[in-house]
Image (cartoon, rainbow, N blue to C red):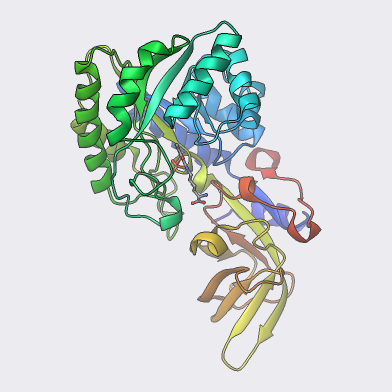
Length: 385
Ligand code: LLP
């Protein structure tokens, strides 16, 4: 949990707000360096998980690249110090303006998701008299064993080029003279806690790698995407995911050729555990069947519980009374605006501070202004004396 001086500092701040513990972020990056970068792997941080400039700067300084899915993210990555040569641009629906921005900066690679996108990219690159480096995003048809909204590697999903279209795409590629194929890209889903789908992905990637190289293409990038899950139930004991096992799995299962490098696009596992949403209890309501703790954060600040039924750990920071059962809910007029149902936490009263944990990834970035709610300033651990 948080040391007393941190909780005391929180008491004077306007809630709700996001708080980032930079020690946790640095400890996470240290493990990524030790177990991943040291093996020669390239790790691109997926900005979609968190795009706070201060967080990005720490990540860039640790030696990670950037994985972007919009023009805005490309610009944010560049503004935060990432070199364009370390920026990959992914996404199933890149607009012409976004592609033009990527071309202008000569970014490392475009991860392409459809035959039509290849044609558009070729044309736009031609107009700038450039050659775009591309990786083909292939759909490996692997079941990621995660929430249906965040599984992406099945044939039924909208992502990637299906295996059945691959040969046709490869035949056409030489005609697209402003494109240079440098790699293949996969991403099977997010918050994957069971490693079996990653093993399955390696098998499929190895076969596709051989297949494409046999046709005379040289792939220098094998990009296996992101998806490594974090422990939402026990963020204190598992503040850093087990990167040693994660990278070892790929080392054991992926077959790289001499000219090839393994790339990852990790988001949640890098930043998930360093962030918390700090909120205040506004009201308590004791009913016949239920007790409610109504807090001042809502689905506008953290939509994951409403959207994916995600269960974030809730720590009460200012009460050590005996526990009671509560539904912890937000102030928005929708029943889905519920953080947790029927959880046992120390009895709370109006004004108590509560931390909703593991909110560093897909928390602040997915915030909305619904109900015209204002965003309070974000707080970093290094701002607290
Ligand atoms: N690469 C691609 C192509 C992706 O689509 C994603 C995430 C990543 C990398 C990073 O995945 P990660 O390492 O963070 O799992 N909003 C949802 C998660 C959406 C993930 C979308 N794609 C949530 O809050 O759970």
